[in-house]
Length: 417
Image (spheres, one colour):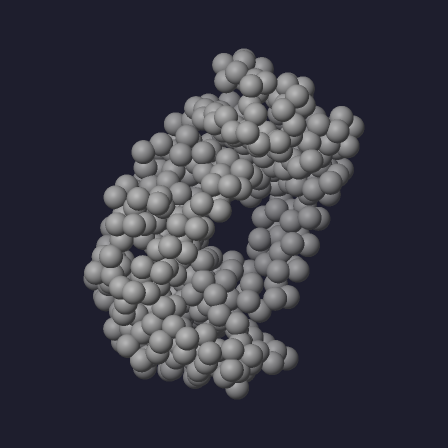
């Protein structure tokens, strides 16, 4: 049963209770991420997420992990462009402990300088690891090319230089100014009683600032290309276009279009480029939405020589897409989307996250029935129209590896016409 309340300080609380669950998944989702950073403090949201686990005024870093693991619980966090999340899962009898820990780390973190020095080293290793992972790095190149010189185009991890400039004082100031009551959502799913949980949150969450901060800087898609030569065995590339925001009426259609084009082993790109021609190991399409923009893209990993054949085939598949979509493909893609929603709904951790993100992005919680119905209403004409709209935009191309045979950018533009 889904219920929602607002605490006296403005923090929103969502519960999704289940009579059969033996555990509870709960967490705090903050609508702040890399898009709220400047060029100078890029990476501070992610660093703050790491440091929140490194000690509070009442617990050491070891005590935080020990208390959770002593009761068999799991605790974790993540940082995105627009959100930072702290969440855990425990058996129902340990719900009070879980809430105490999660509220402790977002209110009472001390940002000890010795812990920070160690964690900066860990994050720098994470940056270096990503720099050594071409199928991750090529997406960072894509973002900075599609959205240059703006927060949306910068890496969530930051750079080695910006991470080294972060101090404990800067972290505390960022937390106190950005983690405000109107940006915090507490979400719980599973064996949880709404009224009791809200009452506990009211008592625990007393130190969050009630002031209001401005929204993230608006995104401005520009497109273009970035090519980086590296001595890899494979070429990794992303070709994409501006798409739609979460709230745009064509967002669901773009998502379904990506499923048709490259959403599984039966999709067009997988069948034509991998199965029939053997040109790639991996290829897929995706649609990624933001609050005010989005990107529709195709990722491919291929060989140095194979890329010269891959690019024309890929462009041709995009050109013919709007006029050749079949009802069979539409029904298959709708089944994939529908099953993903229903399978996700069976996981209480997914429930807690989905409810919180829905409230952040859509300002309300959408039922799975509503989501499925929106997808079911999409027609072949809708898909063709959206495909033409997206593909008419300026492309963004990022390529990494032995890229000498990657099609020139102007030729890509002409081929897509």
